[in-house]
Length: 188
Ligand SMILES: [Mg+2]
Image (tube, rainbow, N blue to C red; front, side, top):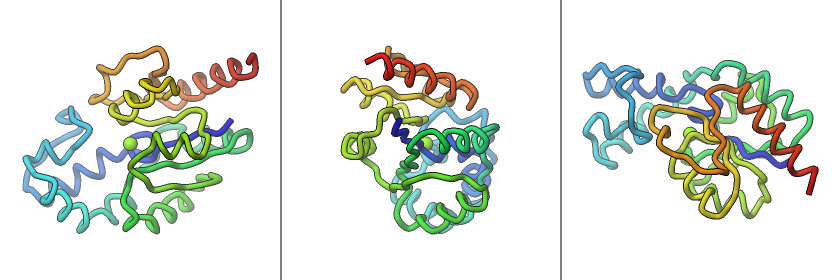
């Protein structure tokens, strides 16, 4: 099966690293419990231009200092041995090198990596069967065209429900959903 996997808040805890550097930049002290928006910068009252300036300044450190989520590395290793794994992230190309170094540092194997904002188009083009992601907007887009998504549960995506949106609150559940989808594919 060709599986697409997001990075931020799916393979790794992006929230904690962003909060650390965004707090430093703003003088605020937000915690993970304050996060209820996929677009974290909005919690700081910044507009996109302000966010870009801060993200460009701290992005390298934010991405390097993020930690893998529990069991993500182990389960991705199992998946890599059985499936085609494409990392699909909306990070800008500016952070391609630190992203690849981080994956290497954490011994995460994959077959392809793509930095792209339009994940639906990318998944259609590269024949990805299922995307694992935390982004509520991606889950909605995929559901609209009947493509399955495993939605990695975060505070800001709890309202998304659809037959083809498989919610997972940890990587054990991600693996269960993948096993189910694979068994269904084999019946076709
Ligand atoms: Mg993400």
